[in-house]
Image (cartoon, rainbow, N blue to C red; front, side, top):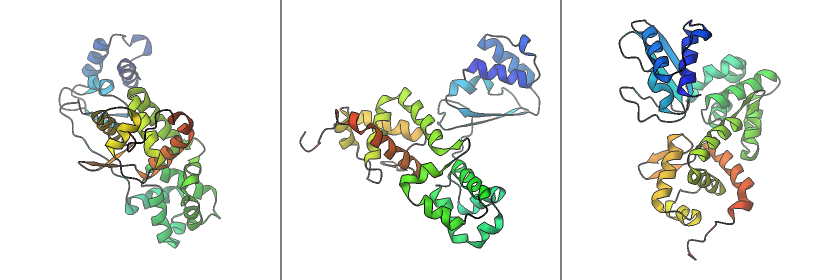
Length: 267
């Protein structure tokens, strides 16, 4: 959504008739700020992809508050408190699973439940899907689902249920990265060829035909949208579910990748 679309939707949610909503971004922002000023109102904006979508919504005074959720770090926003959400722990995930599946089944096999959380990488979406699968199959043991998920080749197939899909969510994020940074998209495909191997920027630069500095930029882009995890200031690794998806990308793209593969030793 554009900033104007976000502001127009907020105004409609605040009761402004659609026919009276203005069009200009400055006028829209002014209308929103005037209607929330001084009110004890909490505005939650989810799925944000850029700071420009939410900057006009930041309250100017006391009363209203704004919560912004999104996959990308919004580093250019001033005067905000940033919170990075870690994957759920076993203790945090159990109540979520229990809202979907029978808590007695989870309690009957606590070790399998803990392994289920690990295989879902603590992802809320993956856990919702796993819990929905258990709920739809009262005869399905937690240990059986765990056994099926252990095979990384089928994990993303299993982590899809009705309109929920980890693969689809990852595909959306990767498509946005490819649009914003072609090198980052190609780098993710390359990392998928050996997803458990350490990330070596010099080797990647040689194979991609770009500078090492450009690879570092691509790594930062992938980390900013949580497709890579920073282990330390000089290290990166693929999160578990991203690793599975990157391996699929590498397999699909293999015929086109051969054109730019370079043996760094030979080079």
